[in-house]
Structure formats: structure tokens, C-alpha cells
Amino acid sequence: MSEGSVRFALVGAGFIGRIHGLAIQAVNRVFGETPLRAEAAILIDQNAALAERQARQLGFAEWTTDWETGIDGADAVVIAAPSFMHRDIAIEAAARGKHILCEKPVGRSVAEAEEIAAAAARAGVTNGVGFTYLRAPMVRHAIDIVQSGLIGRPVSFRGWHAEDYLADPAAPFSWRLDASLAGRSGSLGDLGWHIISIARALCGPIASLDALAHTAYPHRRSGDDPARPVENEDWAAMLVRFRSGAVGTIESSRIAHGRKMDIGFELICERGSIAFDGERTNELSLYRADESAAVQGARTIRINGAHPDYAAFIPAPAHGLGFNDLKTIEIHAFLQAISEGRNLSPDLDEACRIARICEAALAASASGLRIEAPETGMTEPKVAA
Image 1 (spheres, one colour):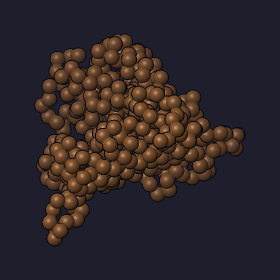
Image 2 (cartoon, one colour):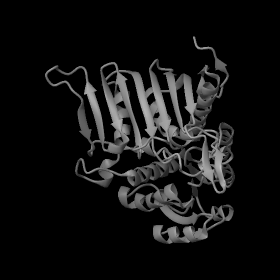
Image 3 (cartoon, one colour):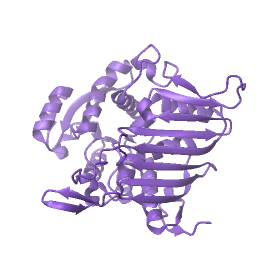
């Protein structure tokens, strides 16, 4: 690293890659003086025209279509390419001593996620995973409320992540539906990882799960083939028991008409409840059972400077942050982790745990039986007690 800065190589210039590029440019301006500053060194994409255009627009010093040579001059690599490219890029980046921030789902399987995590651990590089919604100040405030004990321990959790990008039965086949490219987890991999990460942050490790996975539209048009088989699930739901004793449900769907970015949860605790709606990401609902009956009721907490990282963007309350801002917070946290010689939380080990949970859910659905200790990779079904 050059003195006081981290040179970033961004691999992938599509939707999420562009968001990362904006965040790399914004983080120094938003957070001001920090131990390390971000430097937009090189943007990498297989599409040359896209790489050149995005590099110019996002202010990267260079661009290339070859990630193997492109990452050489970088200190940190942001992997925002499709998941079938994660393994090779991450393992090579680790071998060259590059810090790694990888988008989720990490790789296509538990095996790939574990290979990536092991490579980063061997190299001793800082690593992290792009769980954007865990960076939302109001989600982090919810976690703080639970950890403070204000409303007691968690009792039950209901969480979901639903979108409608494949709700139309006539929508064509894409790489996300091909298990060789996207993995066996469909909605769980693309969406479920986000809400599982939040569930674990609020309630702790998952001790057991039952699940049902369903492909509502098992065939899609692909070129001249009017009915190419879809190889992963459109919808999934888990019934979980947390090690803490709390119970819950976790649902993911890519076929939910009208749901554009619907991630949310309701957490019931001993002395109150918390609710979050991802389409109203600057608000949190809090109910406290210990208040007088005359004033009891769910109250809306609107984002303000008392909540994590908000004041770095805006001094006035309730003006709100957007999705791009959450990525800026993530890049800032990644820089802090590098400067302190530790991993970002969540890291690649957490990615492995969530990958195991998703594979366990598919195993539970296929067998109709409960999976014990799903985070360990022990996916042998058990007869439900």
C-alpha cells in the first residue's frame, strides 16, 4: 500500500459493481480524515466498452478486461463479478496478498466458499462480504437495542426478502437459473443470504431448521428452446430454531409481484418488539411493553445523528440515506478493518456458515426432515422430534 491509501481493483462493472465504484469514490469525501483513504486504481470487466465507460465515469485511473493482470497493482480487490467467477479471482487475489471484499453469495457452493475462506486465512489478508443491509443504520440500531437488553432477549423472528424480477412466467432464462453458473441456491443465494445474515445478527446461530423450496416456473424460454429447465428454486421458507432458544421463519422469493426490494423483519422479544421495512430503510418501529398503558404503542424511530454513521452524511435528522450510501459505509468499514489488521464483519467465515444454512435448507426440503446443526455443514436429515 502507498502511504495512507488503499488502491482498489474493482472486478465487475455491472449493477453492484457500479455501486461499489461510486462508494470507493465517495468514502473519502463522506468520512473525511481516516487512517486509510480509498484510491480508485483499476476497473475490470470482460466487456471492454462497459469497462472503459464505467472507469471514465467513476474516476478509475485505469481499466482492463483481464482480471489476472488487472489486480496486480492493487492492494484490495472488490469482487463484484457473477458468483461463478468468485473462486478463481478470490483465491488468486489472496495468493498475491490482496485484501478481499467479495459480494454475496460467495461462490456457487459451500465447497467454493470454504476454498475462498481458507485461501484468505492462509494469506492473512483482510476479508469481508458485501452484506449491504447489515450496514443500514436502522438495522444496526435494532441490533444495538437487542444487545443492550432494552426489550429483553429475542423470542421469535419473522424475516423475508422478496423481489419480483422473475415474477413474470414469460421472463426468459438467465444465468441465475443455471446451477452450473449460479449454484443450486436460487432465491436463497440471491436474496436469502441478506435476511439470514440479519437473523443471525439479531438472534445468534441457527441450531436446526426445517425448510420447503419451490420452483413455481420450472421452465423458461432460452433462445430457440421454449422450455429450458430452471435448476434452482424461486421461493424458499425455513422454520428455524436458534441456539439462543428463539424460533423463527425466514423466507426468500424472486417471484413476488409488486415487491421491488422488500427485505424486512419483525422481532418479538421478552419486553417489546422491533420491525424493519427495507423499502422504508430510514425508519424502525419499536414497541416497549414496559411503558404505561396510556402511551403504549409502536413508535416510529426516524433516522438521525444518534444512529451509526448517519451524521457523516447529513447533520439533520430524517433526511434519509439510500442504497449507495450503505455501500459507502461498507467501504469505510472495510478500510477500518484493513487499518486495524482484522477482518471485516461479516467475513468469509460467516459466508461459509450462511452457505451451509442454504444447502441445509435444500436438503431439508428434499427430504422433508429436519436438519440439525446446519451451520456446521452437517446436512444429514433427522427425523423431527
